[in-house]
Image 1: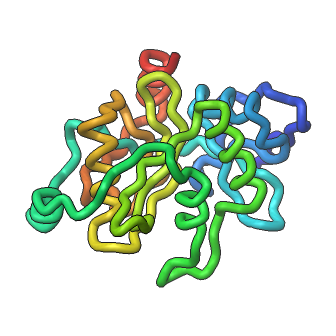
Image 2: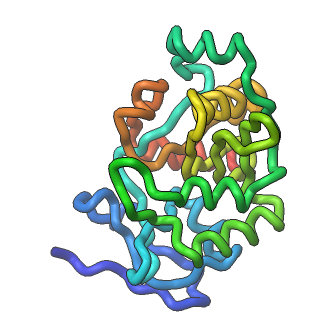
Length: 216
């Protein structure tokens, strides 16, 4: 297996994404930091951090890349009924840290999380700087679901989403697609759930072209 590049804390120069390993899933580099400068440089180049507690920071750039074009969002009949009922009050950026913590909570099929304490602090800082954003669904003054991610120009880099009530995360996604209206939503890695909502795989080279076009 070829070796990966190890980064220093102040090293903002990532190796070319073409050097990312095909297996597993586009691993490109390790080390470095979650400073705003490094995170902004990474996202702008089509790279994102993803690792577990106890591991070094791992940087990824998959090929192909999973994305969602907002105009291609699939609205099922059941979701359409939920949207018509309007059971949630939708807000932006009023509970970013709370949304991240909800996304980090254990799921039914997995007790672990990749949203480490350092990730929580780093992305909360990015939120304070105006780069990280949340879309929240509220019901009876309680957070029912939502999503968060990084936005650069017209690209929204989706990080995670959660639901505590029926379709709450999907309602937040529909709001992102049809109210915020980014040109492109980065889903990062494939899942059947996101495919059912309209996400698709595109070549990494094409994804990088979209970043060059839409990222300010």
